Every structure is written in structure tokens, then in C-alpha cells.
Length: 134
Ligand code: FES
Image (tube, rainbow, N blue to C red; front, side, top):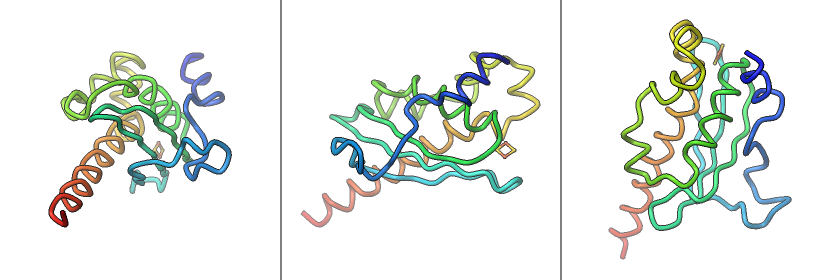
């Protein structure tokens, strides 16, 4: 639990999504994800380089498990390819936070990874559109 609390209190890769303090952080895709059951929400901002997540920032408000889970996921997905991430299931987070917590809070613990996957789909849509427009 200390590990989860640490991620909640000192979230990795949390920060502004608009590049207001670091100009390098304009993102390629920005995606909201939420848990309708409770209203908790996160926004992730991804930057790609040749199909690989090069940068990740997130903002959010919600329960400890959802925010810590997103922080944990941010460290996992940076440097990974879109395909690798799309192939990740909930076990990626279960392995880290433990079955007990993951199973008792499935929506909270997977909010981060689900939102990253949504963001990748959205990014691919954008790219397809760009290509179609020439
Ligand atoms: Fe809302 Fe956990 S209670 S995401």
C-alpha cells in the first residue's frame, strides 16, 4: 500500500498538458478517460516518435487507486510501441499492485491503461484522416 500511496502523492509524469511550462510537451493526442460509476477522470497526453510513446503526461482527479494506477502505467508505457500497448491486458497492472487490490477495484486500477489505449486508437484515427487528406 505504501507503494500505491507514494504514486498517488508523487505521481510520475503528471503535469500540464498544454506545454505551458515545457514547450516540448505539446502532445500528439489528448484523451479523456473516466469511470462513469464514480465520476473520476483522467486526461492523458501522448507524444509519439515512430510509433513509440516518447512522452506521457497526465492530469486527473479521482480515487487513490485510479491516480496511482495511471502514474504506474505512465512508467510502463513510455518507450513502448503502440502495438505492445494495445496488446496489454489488465494483468499489466495486476502484476504490480497485486491481485487483491486489482480484483476489488478493477475499474479504478485499469483506468490508466484503458485511457492510454483509447488515446492510441484516437491517434491512429487522426493519422488515417491526415493520410486520406493527403
Ligand atoms: Fe473512481 Fe476509483 S472510485 S476511479
